[in-house]
Image (tube, one colour):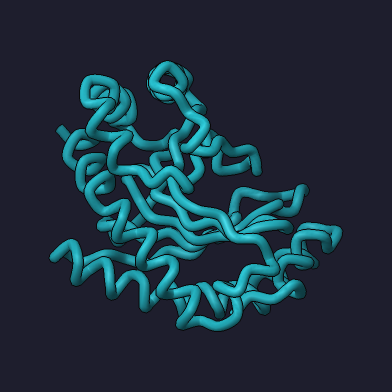
Length: 208
C-alpha cells in the first residue's frame, strides 16, 4: 500500500515538484482506501460520509510537510466539522479523529469533555496518541496522561484559538499494517470504530 518511496515524497524540494509527487504517488492511494473508509463510516453512522483529499491550495512557496484524506458528513468541506483523517508525514502515517481549529463549536466541545472527563478518557485506548496541532509531528501518549494532564490539554484546546485535538494512532513506515490496502484498511476501520462514540459526541456538541 504505502512504501518508503511514498514517505520520501516529503523530502523532495520545491512546492511544484513535491505537489506533483503527492498527486501522482499518494493521492491515488488516498482515493482508493478513502472510498472504502467513507463507505464503511456511512454504514456505521447511518448517514452519508464524504471523502475529501487535501489540496494544499493555499500554498504558494513552501511545500507541505504532510498530506491527508479527511472524511466527514459535509459534502462541501471538512475543516469546520469533526472528521476522520488518514495521512502521512515523512516518518509516519497517522489515523485520527480530528477536531481542528476551524471547528466553530470547539469551545463547547472542550467544555463538555471537561465536565464528562472520566467518561471521555475511558473511551480512548491507552496505546493511542494525542496531537494538539495537525501540522506538527509532536504527540502525547495517552498512557502517560494523568487526569490533570487531560484537564490542561482540554483547557488549552478550548482557550487557544489555533489549538486542536486529534486522537488516534500512528504507524512507522516499516509497519506490517502498511503492507497492503486490506491490512491498512482493517487497521484504520478498527481505529475509527473505537472513535465513533467520540465523533458522535463531538458532532452533537459542536452544533448545539
